[in-house]
Structures are given as C-alpha cells and as structure tokens.
Image (cartoon, rainbow over all chains, first blue to last red; front, side, top):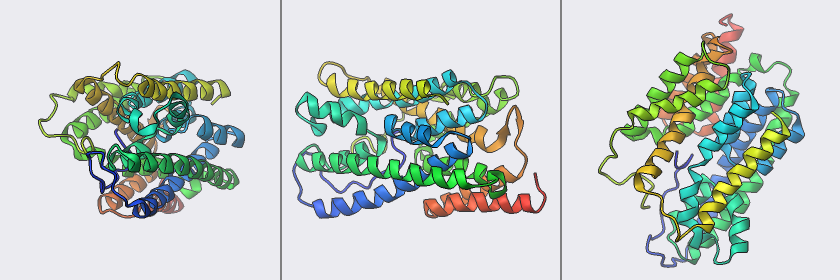
Length: 243
Length: 102
C-alpha cells in the first residue's frame, strides 16, 4: 500500500516553490488529527491484547510505522510467534525503500538531515510532500508532517493504550471489531485499483483457508500468495505516482 | 510481544528507510519491483483484515464481529468519517453480543 491516506495534490510537480504554506499547515493539522485517531486505535488494540503500557508506547516511538505495528500486535494477539510478527512487519515496510530513493533531495541535502529524516519517512509524510513538488515548499511540508505526525502518533498511542487498559472486558464493547474495521477503511483507497483488488481478494482467501491448518501469524504471511493474481501492470499511471 | 521483537522491527524499518535516502542516485527500483512492493503490502494488510474480522484462534470468530466490520465497511464506502466507521463497528458488535449473538 502506498499510503494509508491520500493527500489531495495542490502543489506543482515541477519543484517550483508555490507560497501557500498557510494552507499547507492547515492540511497538515487535519491529517495529523486523523493520524492521532489511528494511533489511539493502535494503543487500544495493543493494550487490550495485554501489552504493557511502556512496550506499547515504546513500539510507537521506535518503529513509527502504523501498518506494521498493527500487523505485529495482531499476529502476537492471535497467538503467533514474535518471529512471524517481525517478518510480517518488515515485509510490509520494504515498500519504504523506494520512498527514500524518491524523497532524498526533498528530505535534506546533508547526511545528518537524512539520518534524522529517515525515521519520519512514513506513508503520509511522503504522500503529502510529494504532492508539493521537489522544492523548498515540499521540504517544509515534509518536515512539518514528519515532526507533527510523530508527536500525534505517540500521543494518540498513549491515550488509546490508557483507555484500552482501563476497559474491563473489551469483547463486551466490541473492541475486537474496531481494528479490522479501521483497517478496511484505511485500505479502501488502495483497493480502488483493479489489480490491488484481485491481489487483496486472493490474499484474503488464502489466509482464511490456511487459518485452521497453520500456526497463528502465518496465515497473514501466506496471504502474500495473492500476488500470483497481480497480472500485468495496468497501462495507466497509478494514482499517487506522479502527483 | 517482546522488547527484542520491537527493537528488530524498529531497526529493520529504520534501515530500509535510511537505505533509500542514502542510496539515491546509485540504485534505482525497477517499476515492476516497485509495483510488487505496493501490491505485497496490500496483500498483507487485506489478509490481516480478513483474518482479524473472521477468525479467532484456528476457527470462526462468530457472527457479531464480522457483522460489525461489514457495517463499518459500508459506512466507509459511503465516506463516513474514520472515527464514525470505527465506532459503528464496535457498537454493532457490542449490540449483537448484548442480544446474545456470539
């Protein structure tokens, strides 16, 4: 998945510096609020799965990659091993490699800036900055996103974890339905593409069919077999690619 | 979950991100590989959503949970705000359980 949430492109793609930082800051704030809510869902899920608070918060600080955090916690909560959780999370985050290749000149000119920026190179900050070209405006947008998303993600995690830990019986409140529902909502934009839909359906079918036979955690990984349905790349430019 | 698992996942994720930033100009990702990475991520997340919605242990999770997720999915298709989608899922599932649906 390229991005959990696509950002409407308002900048030019030529790297010219369009001065609309006020509007950008408003958009960053709106996106940050949404990310805070997702962070709170992660905190609640992890806490109701029995993870201690320092570990929940530590994970958000150290990993800072929502999809892989959800995946790892869900795999462990389902009774899977830590190895399956880590392998699944790392496979998911391999998609960040091309992010870095594309974003290097936007993030910083010097190695130190890139070493710091790497930690906040996430789906949302990349999508947001990319929509603002490759010039100074894109750089300001990247850092505004990176820093504020990191703050709200961790703040949301703390709030969600405290709320989740205070809940007497999560199943009574239907908390177990909230996580897959959030995931479905976040995946819908990706699944608008026909090839992603085919792969997704195949992945779901394989993972569900494997569940009775494989140890917990592995069914999600064998879902990768859905890639067999990828087919050829569609001729059109993929959404989010050139924006 | 263990601290070791968190450290390995965090370090691996950071190195993937840093590698892209530092290898700029020396390495290019072919279009086909980039597409496979994107689709692979979608496959993992859909598989995760499906198993989390429908299974518990090695069996079926009961009807209350998938019903809640289905209601939320419809709300998401209708472009309901994210928070509402999540609350609808939990409320539907909680209501069904209150009514005796497992």
